[in-house]
Amino acid sequence: MRIRLLLGTVWLLGLFAVVCHYAPVFRLGEVHVEGAGTQADTVATLLAEPEGTNLLRVDLQQWARRVAALPAVARVRTHVTWSGQAVADVELETPVCLVDTRPVAGVSMTGALLPLSEHVTEGRLPLITGIGGEAVYYTASDHPKMRTALAFVRDWRDVAGPFAGRLAEVHVSDAREVSILLWPERLYIRLGRGDWHQALSRLWAVLARLPVSGNELDMRFKDQVIDHI
Image (tube, rainbow, N blue to C red; front, side):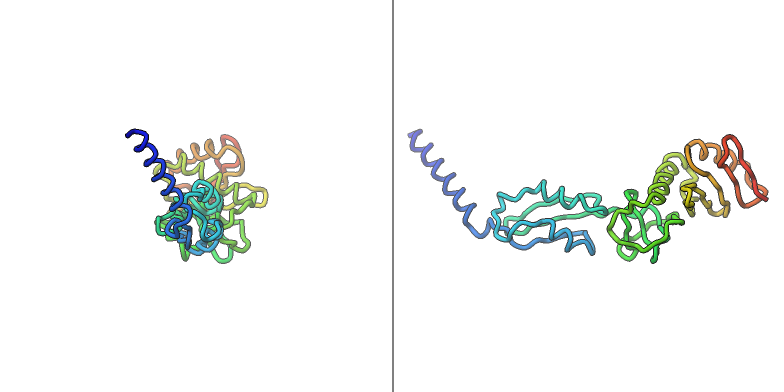
């Protein structure tokens, strides 16, 4: 009896495997992309499995790695349905700053340029100036000045505390020195290069003594704050 039961189980498993291999319901059909905006076609091409591929042979982790390698992708979830549909649910990165390209674009913390028409921003974002150039959307910028600006923004977020929302502009010079504009004071501050954490720590003490006599502070020199009248 046990032998018959075992043989019957093996036969059913074999039949199921054959059905999974040949039945149309287990075959890959269309590709459906969600949340990728204008990158939907690019994502679809990355799910490059021949139509009709057996669903059980699809490597979902490889799919996810391909899509996650795109510069503006924050997260991706991939799966297939028993109806034969391949699905990629994509979450794009969000702008943390604006950048003075033509036209003005959003930029993620990884340097991906994002069209503002497709990425809604919440609240006021600081503008990075001194970069210029054309916006090549959904491409990670490897511009040295962009890397400098984003490194400063990371430091600012770490230590700004209640002042975080007052950052209106981050300017990077050709020498990769950083200057910032604070709002609503309209106070322009030259921070230079180097240890921004230390400079910002000194800045809070200066701001606590506002109003300053002028509209520009120079903090490029160690342990000195020059107030330009």
